[in-house]
Length: 368
Image (tube, rainbow, N blue to C red):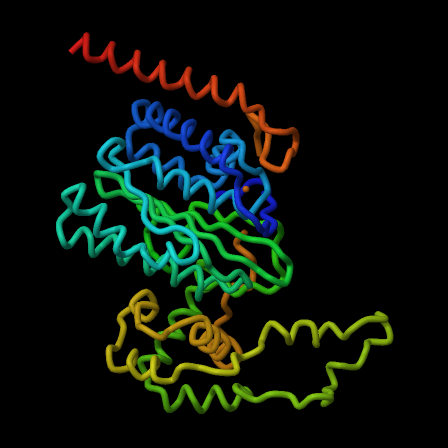
């Protein structure tokens, strides 16, 4: 996966003003008409799956260059104006409650585009597994709250989803592209946008975690009895009583700070609760690969983390603990950064783009 640069996405409350959203919709509609004519529907989806291109799009639409709302508002604007009948592209899902409607949105888009039942089922699976991977396999402290899926009339798709970290007040955005996904559970992203590299990230999507995943799968298929024994042996589920101290709490006199081993030990915290029923279901199914294991209902971050730690601490198969974590303005920004939105120029640009698109289409009709 290529990575370049960093984009800050601080959590911002409130909502975009009506006057701006209205202009964003008009400009987006005009722009996307030209983009589809120039690059085709799949070419446009490929651009949306590029984190930096998407960030630039937000800036051109005059929203924000560094806000969490960059993702949610822009995707909401696009969903409202980019309709399958006109553009050959449909957008499912969205922020919060809208994300829960993703599967029904896919049904609606599939019906409009004439997809087969098997194609619709394939799209639904891609939506679910991409969310599961970013929630359970990339344990970076960012909980997903936004999920949008962009689908072309040819059946290609992109996923743009975002998570938030309440403790540091930042968001992180994850981009997927169907044509770039070889394996859902191994380095599937087109890019991950965030403010910084986190120190403690369990990344089971890394190729470096391949051995750990294989061992995890062996443990699942061997049954829950041995798994529970190893989990308890490593201290899983035990809480340290309030006020109780360990040797790791003592400061290293030579460094004048907290002992490095104590800091390192925080990485190896087992989850307090594990859904053993999900493990039993997985055992009954005997998944042939890690992706099939992830597809079991009830398998989440706790199950993935418990297996990865047992695989490393007892069997020596280490997962990756490296964080897998890409600016521009045309009309200003919502918060007046770097300058207030130039409403007149934004409106004039929208008209110009619409006229250009209309003239181009009339020329095509004349030639044909």
